[in-house]
Image (tube, rainbow, N blue to C red; front, side):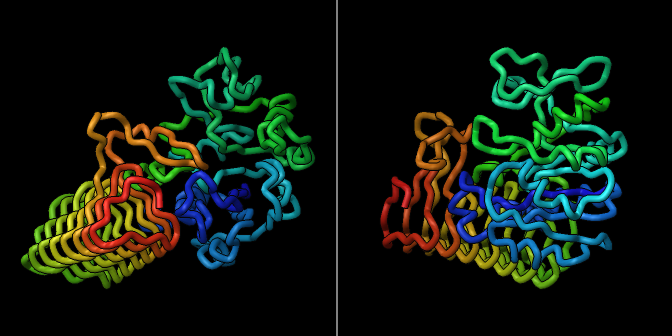
Length: 393
């Protein structure tokens, strides 16, 4: 079984985090998002990984190389974003025999990917309360007999989870016409397979499509919850660590720091004296947490610095962000409603009562800045010392 993993997209809905980094390469625990998908494929027995690349392709190549965990890796370049079937068709010259298609920006229940490979042809599904916003699968006698996109009256509650195991013959059905959305859809390929083969639905226990910043936070909540305590770095005897915490080799935790897991502190990172780190938090490589800082349930990417006496909660900070001393991130609305965030120019609900700030690479706040809930700081954005910021910057 070859596994074709789609990693070509930028991820416009997750901006500004994807301004210089493809969405599938954003950090989820100790590896990029796409690596969780590739690992699931390798664990399921894939004998080759074919990565479809496009936006910032070299970032993907640099991470996975020509061999990943002993499995050969090849690359297909998608020069335009013309849909999922178009992406897979780009990889057609690399495919021999049956093949799986997985989304590099999805998190899958790994055991289900195992079953997907074993029962080829098959498609992963997830049971949802309201399937009207999904492609919905109908089944008969344990096989898929139809797929309908966003039906007003869904035949089942089985949503298409975007993971497929196709027979060799499906290679000849990859060239599909444009859909009403103007894209070449992989679901049309699935429909051709359903017409000719008995396709098994494989139900996922858990699945997450990471499209927006708070879903990246949720992805880290999922994967960091599985941490097993390991202390390899330099931790002061006067620091207080409880729960499932990983301190990688080369990381430093200074005296008086209080860390409550699950927390991952990556190589080269520093947690300063009397700092508090709790919730589900990722402190990326070479990040710095200053004296007296509070960080809770957040993602701090590589090289980011949160300077002394600052407070960051329920937030996602890109690479090399500088949070000036005394900066405070608010994460709740006074009216108790879900926090909203701007996605492609529109304010939408995050579905979360607590959500702070999303900062793009290189953003900087002045000392004693106050940031309101659901705020976006774009790449390189700055604030003035003492400023209260209530609108996206």
